[in-house]
Image (cartoon, rainbow, N blue to C red):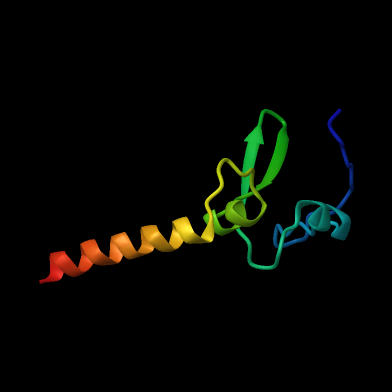
Length: 86
């Protein structure tokens, strides 16, 4: 079941909409974060725009890599780079 929260707010003279604190906290939004506004028929949908760092920290995990594997890959890539610059 999808959890649905409903809030009422006002549109200011300068077309500013204040999002309720509970909605912002529920979505994990932070000041300065970009959001997408979608107009669908007679509705407005506001969606957070997630960046790669957010997905790395909070998104679904699709694989695992050990620190040793990461270090080995890093060394291989550094070796390739040093050969290309020689």
